[in-house]
Length: 165
Image (cartoon, rainbow, N blue to C red; front, side, top):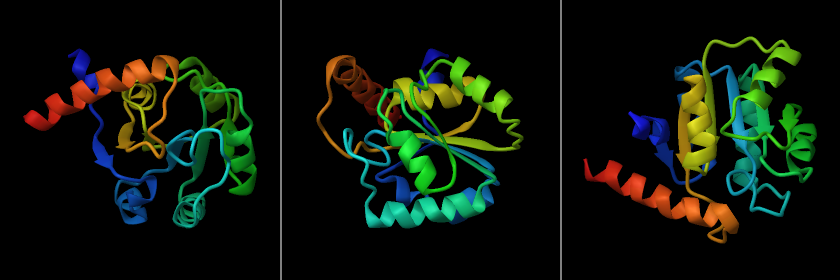
């Protein structure tokens, strides 16, 4: 049962490998995107050309796009301004409090939501707690620090077990 919370619905290499057709066919109207190592390399706010194109398409199709980060940098906010969507820093994923407040405060109405991120213990777990679709993407940069480095080892074991089935 616990493993269920850490099993993404899909795994992709890069965020822009999630096709707009997939988003449309699943009727995703609320898309939650992680920042660090998903959209940009941690510590940077530069989005590559393919991701830029993908984000623009998502912003046009999805009713609500939220770019969020667990850290205090302004990257999520900066990107949200660039792509005319919402952004929050200190999202405190996988805890539901900040996202629930955001949804309530902004009167977000949706039918189908999806979280896309590079970590099982933050992004995917958050999706599972809300019963949203979840897509795990490979991280853009292999360098991790502190607890993230520890969790990556545990994530690797969980993903290997999933692939063994």
